[in-house]
Length: 130
Image 1 (cartoon, rainbow, N blue to C red):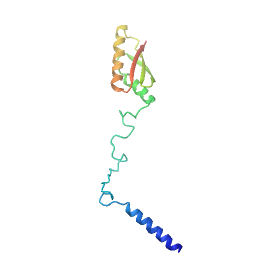
Image 2 (tube, helix red, strand yellow):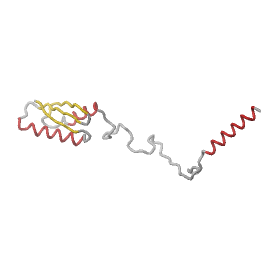
Image 3 (cartoon, helix red, strand yellow):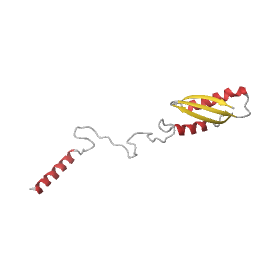
Image 4 (cartoon, one colour):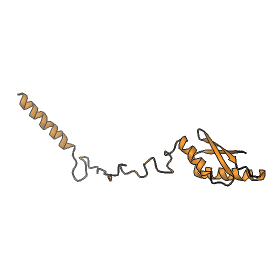
């Protein structure tokens, strides 16, 4: 009797499994199943969080380094520090020693422009020190 119960249970499981299978890409309800190419992203594009420019890519540490690199080539900038407070980035630039006082606002503006263009997710505040 036990053996007959095992076979009945096995048959029931097989029947249950077969009813869930679809044929020709359609389910029992007539809904077409969707398949994706085997790229690991299930059909989503640019889902890799390490792609440059992606809003999830960076954290404050990475942004600090890349912001300092971005304004390194602005004429008149010797060094810089960046401090974050939420979506505000406070940038202090150290100016070259040979810079005249009337050139300081231009250097600050150029650094702010570069940062605002490359980091629109932050409100950029720039000040300088000699």
